[in-house]
Length: 502
Image (cartoon, rainbow, N blue to C red):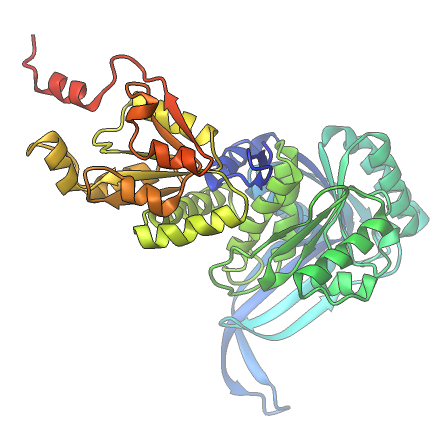
C-alpha cells in the first residue's frame, strides 16, 4: 500500500482504515534489534517524613518491578505490536543480567542472542518513586567500548541471525556496544544481505551511520549534528536533508515531540506529520516505541510514508501513558478505528461549512465529485455507484434529501430511516468524503454553491435529465453516468420485505 496518485496529480494519504489493514499484518514482520540493553527498575513507595540525617525524603518501598529498557525496550515494543523480535546485545554476569534474560524468556514474540561479558556490568537504571514523582535515579553502567572478545561474540551473533530478519534496528544508547568496529561491520553485513536498516542515533556525527537505510534522530540530536534548529517545518526539512547527505541512505525521520514528525526522503517530497497525541503524560520510551512501530510496519510490507504514519500514531498512544510503556497491536487498531469514527462524524456538514471546505479542496487542485439521492437503504447498487464516483474524483460529496424532501418525492411512508441515520451511514462509507442534507426537491442550489467537477448519477438517467448537468458542463466539468446493477433498488427491497412469505 502506498500514497494514491489522484487525478489532480496530488498524492493522497491512506485512510486510517487502510492503515489498519497493515497493522493486521504485523505478525509477518521479523525484526533484528541490536544495541545497548538496559534494565529499568522502579522502586515505589510512600514518603511521610524527611531524614534526620540530611534534608532528604525517607522512602518506604512497597513495590519493586523491572522492565526491559534501551534496545530491549525496542524489541519488547515490537513483540507487543505483534511482530517477531530477535534481540542481540551485551549483559553482565550479574543479577541484573539474569533479570534481563528472565524478562526476555517470558515475553511472547521475542527471542535473544545475548552476549555475557564478565568484565562489564549490565546497564541498569533504578528509579525511586513516590506516586508519579521520581526522588532519585541510580545508574549502574559503563560506557567503555566493547573489548575484542565481546565485539567478536556480538558480531558472530549478528551474522548468525541476520538471515532470519526483514528489518534491522540499531538502538544506540552510547553505552559502548555499538562502538566503531562493531557498528561498521553491522552496517556492512546488513547492506550485503539487502536488509532495511534503521539507525536510532546517539552520536553527533551522523556519518558514523553511513549505509543505514533510515536514520531516526530526535530534534535535539539533529540539531547537534547539523547545527540547525529544527523547530519549524522548513528548518526540519533542511536539517533532515543534511543528515541524509551524511548517511547516504534513503530517508531521515526527524521526531519533533509535540510538533510531530518530518520525513525527508531521497528524490521525494518531504512529509510533515502532525502529532496524533491527544494528551501527554510521559515521553519516556516514546522514541523506542516509534522506532519499533516503524520497523514492524516496514517488515509487514508498508511503504515508508505509511510506516511513518503508523509510527506517529503509535508514539501518540505511548506518550499518553505514565512511565516507559509499550503499545499493543489492539491499542493501535482501536486508535485507528476511533479516529475513523471521529472522522465519520466530521464528514456530516452544513452547506455553508461544505462550501468553505470545498473551496479549500479546489485551491489544492483536487477534483470534486457530487452525487445525490435519498439513500434510504444502502444496497450493492449504491455501493457500486459510490465506488465508481470516487474513482472519478479526488473528493466525493454526497447530498441527501432531508426527511421532508423524501416524503414529498416518495410518499408519507418514506423514508424508512431518518435523515441523521442516513447521513451517519453514508458518512461511514469509505468512498465518501463529505455529506450534506438538502431540503429542496432537487440539489440544484447545492450544486451551484459547491461547483463540483464531476456530477454522478445512475445510468437510468440520460445526461440531459441530470439536474445541474448543464451547469457543471458550463464550468468545465462532466457528468458521469454509472451503470446500475440489475435487481437492486430501495423500492424493490421494501416491496420484497412487505410481501407475504410463500
